[in-house]
Length: 313
Image (cartoon, rainbow, N blue to C red; front, side):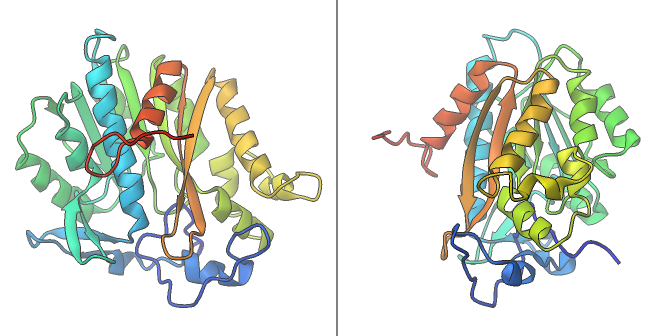
């Protein structure tokens, strides 16, 4: 029986019960199942083109527009400044179309958004373990006019040697590579980060890090896959009585693991469930270059219409 706790992104999760909040403003352990139970079959629905689409909740639009505008800013800012190939690699890419449950509308998935930016990257690679998503995404990419090399969508486990080797074959080692990892479950192992960080000097990481979800699961005694994601043999120790405020040690630990790989620049945005404002996960950037965090902050200032908002703080 698999791990019932899908903590990266509760898109498509059942949120029928009211969410209780503990004194830290987090969902209580008793509400974890309501927040984090994922029915994979029900997350895929018919899209507007009759191909599979992923059903998501409204908070996913917050994440989606940050990722899209980050790609846009990097594409424009580094096309000439870097001078070499620019690559966007997206693991857990999905089918290429989203249905926003709260609005009843369809929108392009992040892979389609990434290839349609004004100044595209030179290389794009997308991967997903679900053959339905792979087939649908490939068809949608084939229908999208792109002035870039878009490699065939890879089917397979994002942490597998086969997927790693396919990415290595597609992306030149001198590329400035943005690796976007947005899994629906605890399926993104730290060893995958290590693999690419050791092979690409200019590797930026755009990662969905489920800090509040980790806290809730570990408090409930479910270490499961958390060890592989956090690169810690006993991650429950990170939320023990000496760890300070819940979640702080998890963030610090993960950052320290990346610092071992020579990452020095970090920025993140907490994505919250819209109605209750419950924190769901951190969307974070980690880089060896300060430019990446500057670009990320710029993306945070853009509204969903692409217009830059005033920073009053």
